[in-house]
Amino acid sequence: ALPRDLDGRRVVVSAGGTREPLDPVRYLGNRSSGKQGYALARTAVQRGAQVTLVAAATIALPEVAGAELVTVGTAQDMRAAVRQAAVGADVVVMAAAVADFRPTDRAEYKIKKTDREPDPIGLTRNPDILAELVQARADGQIGAQVIVGFAAETGDSAGDVLEHARAKLKRKGCDLLVVNAVGEGKAFEVEDNSGWLLSADGSERAVALSSKSHMASDIWDAVVPLIQA
Ligand code: PMT
Image 1 (cartoon, rainbow, N blue to C red):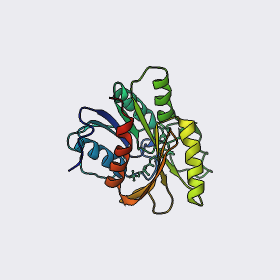
Image 2: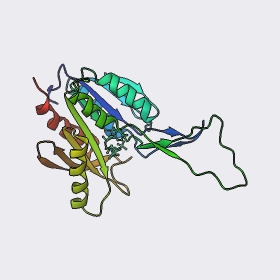
Image 3: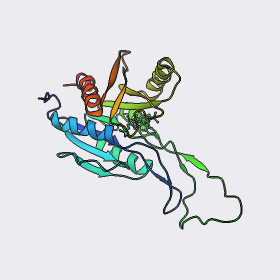
């Protein structure tokens, strides 16, 4: 049986990949299936938490019984939903793959194929939801106590990946960073995940390749001691 160590806690988990529209039928997106975020939400419910799952685009996944589901499209939609849910939450886990940029122009009608060369796609930076949550907490605005980020990193070696991830932990200022080495056939879409858990206090732990549910349990094990009584 799973420990009921999240009893009475309110947690917010984001999952899936945001979609940034170019026109009514096309978008810029990413390969997140939502599996890791859904596993985190399901495990948190099983451990007693009251869960809000903010889901961008995912593959068809079984619903997480007992969680409140909020579906969103773009990074800006996700930002609004996460900020709202984060008020008074004990933990926010940003497992979603959020687009860093969106097309600057969103055509009202489907962009037509023409004989001339296509226009380049202009991009505008999206807000960094995770960094904003950390800032809002520092300003005393949003009460989420524990803030967990993910880092999907590519690199030629584990050393490279960890070096990037340590810098990201500092930059983003979250309490725990879950690092996934990504690339061909890794982390995105597949059943299993592996990586490292980096804490703001400097402790680091490797998570061997295992199911995303297993990874979720390891993440909650690391989060629970960070929640104040
Ligand atoms: O969905 P699956 O197929 O199961 O795959 C899981 C996963 C690989 C998508 C997941 O484990 C993962 O790594 N998610 C984060 C992917 C990512 O976008 O990483 P990043 O390094 O670009 O972002 C770092 C962190 O900042 C993330 O917590 C992200 O949610 C957050 N972020 C990023 C950009 C942005 N504008 N706002 C954010 O809050």
